[in-house]
Amino acid sequence: MEAEYSHVDFRILSKLKALGMSQVQLSRETGLSTTALSSYCTGKRVPETSALYRLAKTLQTSMEWILTGEDLTNEESALPIPTCDDTPLESEEADLVAMFRLLPSYEREDLFDLVYFKYKKHVEKKMESIYWTYKEDRLKRKSAAADDGNPSGIA
Image (cartoon, rainbow, N blue to C red; front, side):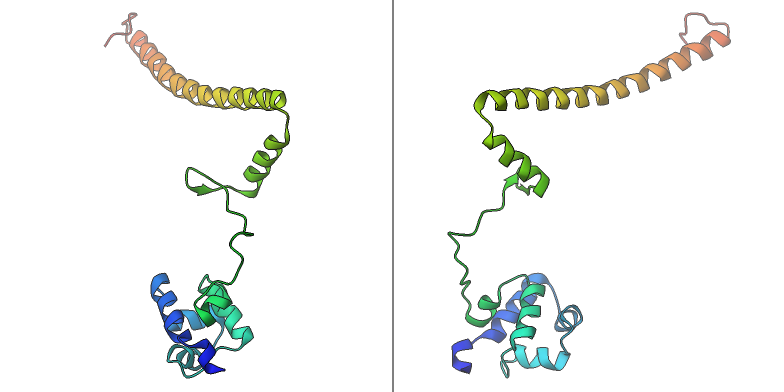
């Protein structure tokens, strides 16, 4: 049985290196003893199911990959993670996209116009607040200059 699971040690060590972790850190995060981890990392033992599960979760990989070097999940059936600008979408954002796709084209157009209107209003509000920051500063300077007896506000 050991022959089926050859190189488990190398796979665990390669994941540790890729994640920049030490065996001690892995021990802390998995709750496995340093002795057990040492025996896995030297090829003396193959992790049992519960230890394998904790290792896979912490090393951000599958149990199959640790044992065999292959990811046995069906890649065709796995749904891709939707992204926007190379950033994964939050579930709320993905739901909005899914609902948008279910709408007929005329409803999509209305929704797109509404979102654009809200976006434009938000951007203009930001610009307006910046404008008023400068405007208030300028009015304060004019007030101060008028108090000094200079009604033009020019210093």
